[in-house]
Length: 485
Ligand SMILES: [Zn+2]
Image (cartoon, rainbow, N blue to C red; front, top):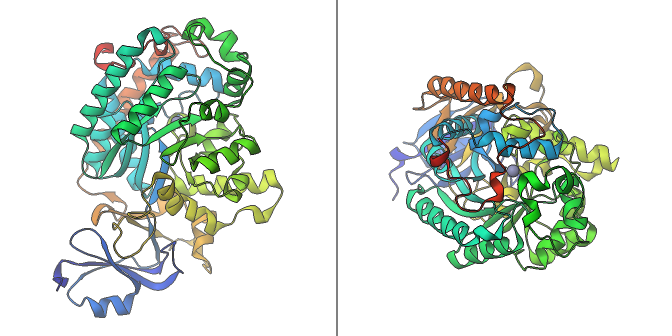
């Protein structure tokens, strides 16, 4: 029999399990192993576990923690640095500016991101990054999720070195990964990874049992480059970025079809963005059972467009919601992301029925877990799953009156309304304060990192819209930050 003294009951005026109806005056009982024991009416759970510790969140909504299906924690210090650049200029300037930071500075940046994620109610991340720093920052902060090691390389003359580097990074990451975070691979995008390298990385992922995430069909520039070998990437940046050494073939296809021909789309593949996809592309994603990470704010801010979410969902493609990096969407606020998603799709489809608040919450939680293949562990509040839950304070005047908690969350809430974040039964954020983290120190150090970046942009060391190093044309060391110090 379980010792009920080591059980914690989290109570609130509403519990929203996502996979079950809303429970007014509800509670979640969490066992000493960090898993959910029971979800139901608070009076019943209190009676069932009489010695349990009771944490009453009052006029709050308890729900599963958000699954942020695409993030880049290490870019948190880049917040707002290139707010008004168009996509091609933005990505190439970002690639260049990021070469100026040391591993320690990336660690600080990722730590700031981890703190923001936790205070925003994000409990699971799917992060693409160099690897070590994000693993340390996210794992140290107590987050759950997966870190996909990002790979670039357009010049096949570096192929062998790149693959050796990727293997070394996989081994390092697997050795360093905490229990709550696993490791994947992220060939960055079809236009920044040669076809040979993309296929080799995909094969390596399969061989090592690693899941894959890749930016696909994000911008018009990418579409034009893959389809016809022309446009801004081909003309303005070809020489600077080394693209003259990358053969894109065959021309005339969409990015999804470009990848499909190499047989790299499968159940363990998440295509991030998918803004520029055709109906045929969507059917390919469905047939291959590949998932999509939808990042509506990032796509809108960079002028990329709006992904065809309704068609993706209609075809049964697994879709999760992602904030992308603060370099593009500035804040990791999943409430804002849900609201933007709903408004954008209603506006572009001219159809209120295209999406509702309940669907948005599902996409941001269980939908993301399904996209990541983690739905048996997280994404909803059910007995046996990890106790990854948050409490959203809805006591303030702008929420009153509440008749539908889904409506309150999607139309009214913001990251500041999160009062409690629990991962695996461990409280990481309580009463709007981080537990056991020196947030002031991290914030101060991140500001210093940001100042360095800002100085680099302002002094012209990085010309927005230009590129001085073109380092991504190189293979290994693709990002040897230790050597960039
Ligand atoms: Zn991204």
